[in-house]
Image (cartoon, rainbow, N blue to C red; front, side, top):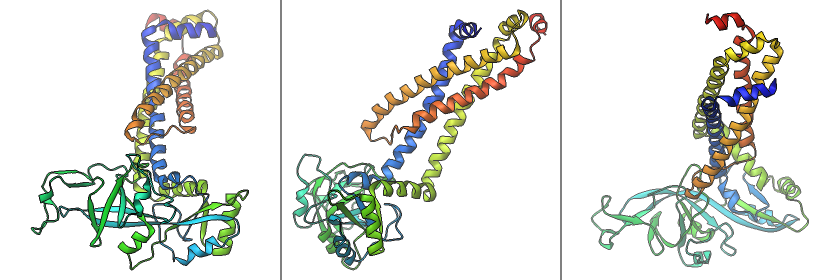
Length: 396
């Protein structure tokens, strides 16, 4: 009988293909929405991902993410370097600054100050040049950080640094090596352009040395994080707990700090609420399509079930047939949808689209489709169970 159920399922090619496409669309929609959400969360801890050699991140005790930070006194770096098990500890500074462009326009940037000696945390340049260009006086590396058209400078020399005020409507081009900015009235020389992992929320980035940060922002604390490398054989988790006990600062391994940052976004970011609403909408639309199509498929095959019931098939056997049809359709359609999502994910990843196919995204898509398909099958069994062959055949 179960073989007959599959023959019924695949016998009407048009309905069968339509059902598979509907389920595939649902699986694609849910999986893509989850991968989109995961991609944004990955951008949220981009700073941690870019510094793979860092075993432990040390910060003020009140800091729980890379997004909301407060700076520490410079003495914290000396205290951390004295902890047993620390191989190396370098400063990292995060500050929001307002930069003025040569035509008078201003733009808020996140200025990231890296260690002067090692340049740990500085990105590689687009043209393959070394990031050691930061050793030049007053130099910086500029990064779009997921934005577009935020780093524009006047195209013509005559429109730069004029005494006539601002020139906001002049022709512009993208900032490049050799250009200049002003931060707090002090010159910043653009020594290179780079591309890093985009940020969430998107923002332009300005990488410079820790010493240059002190020059640009002299009247405030500038030490945001201490990036620690553990000695060989020393566990990062054990070292983090040791740093916390001896300095009373917050110390987290890279994995722990990523999790902390994701949790912070889930609790505090309004953008996450918007993405969650989009995800719920995608799931609702997709599940509605799957449920309706499965119900219609079962309802339109009532005459076939009536024939089987007239031939002696029990209600339990008819239920098994309906659930087998729903299960097979769900697995095949979900496979098609998840596969399509993977292909499209590879295509959009080259344009810095926030897409990340994590292990749970296809599982959630398949599981969600399976649950909805079986639920729709349960609802559609009601007319099957109440089926009276004589009524069906007479058309009443």
